[in-house]
Length: 506
Image (cartoon, rainbow, N blue to C red; front, top):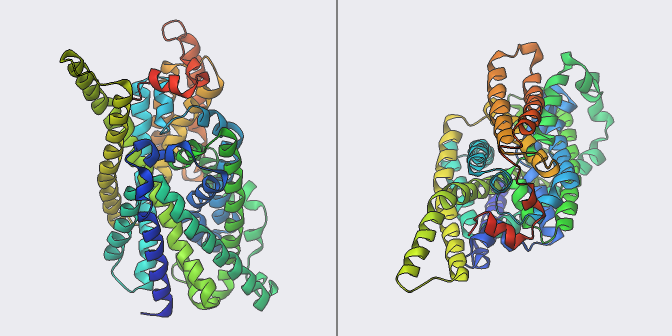
């Protein structure tokens, strides 16, 4: 193997060992496994949010998009994700952190009802399973090229590595591996860009860049892709508010203020890394004017154009970008499956029945014992659910290694249906269950219809229209059903322990 390959082996093994080592911090607790017992400080939460937003799209896909279609065709990914973190920090982090939840569908259960929780949870599960598959594929593709191995073999190895350390330590493993992954990657990206500018000068690259690649026409000219660019920015910037992985980290923050500030930290870091990768995409026009696959821009720069140390950190960072997003996706989906589908509807009824039988036989289980049992059952359920999640993601990454429009559609459906109930559920006291269900169904179904019906020259509006219609549906339906379905807005203001009891968490 080459020196680069050996360096990547050491890098991958190191973060795998670090992730496995977090097993002991879980302490047989589902709550600690999913949100670290709601105990994390600013630096860890901010680092995890930064690592989660810097996925394969924000790095490798960003550079490829800029190379092929101009600045906004690629920079829309990190810009949209940074905008999302900023929006979450401004409007969502503090109220949601105060509610002391484990998963995002918990909000839909507590604020509306169990059916709203199930529907929203299934939509999020489907979209994030595709996200995991896409990031598995991106990381495996790089590994297969560097190590000259079959793509499927690389995919299975990477997927098993990520699953094992994620299942071992849960969000603790995500936090530990993010630290050893993201900061070396940032050093590699920034250091590599500075080296290229210092050795070549910007004038060496600017002559090969078309004028419409760096102006603002990508934001106002339909001919230059403005509709698609805005659809991508808003789908990420607003739609990703309803993101399992981001919200896990918001819930894990020790205080609401830490949750808020951590979002801003992640947003700034995402912009820095995004700008660097976008500039490297522009440099690719000079370095590789006839490259066959634009996704190879960053990997090739890392291998051939910068000093070894920067190249190693860049390539490790590209793999880490996929790994850090995939582990958060695995944890988010398995937590929702274990918590909102399995525990709430199967395990909790069994636990209540067991407690009732114990009381009848004179061996009553205390509330504290019941809570411990439920917490451990949640841990088991979440870990078990990771297996089918990873298996499905591997299958999808084999049959469709570039999810492309499938991933966009899956997240757009969640954006169209789930964002309005979340937002109005926090800020509008008259939001109720019929309104939320109407918004979810109408918004999601409309997005699917527009996917097939929108004219090609209006592509992008199919992303932007459904959330607006969802809002226009939820408000009147909620107002018309106030008497028959009074809203449960009071749960947001409760102290966490009381809210947990009322929500039936234990």
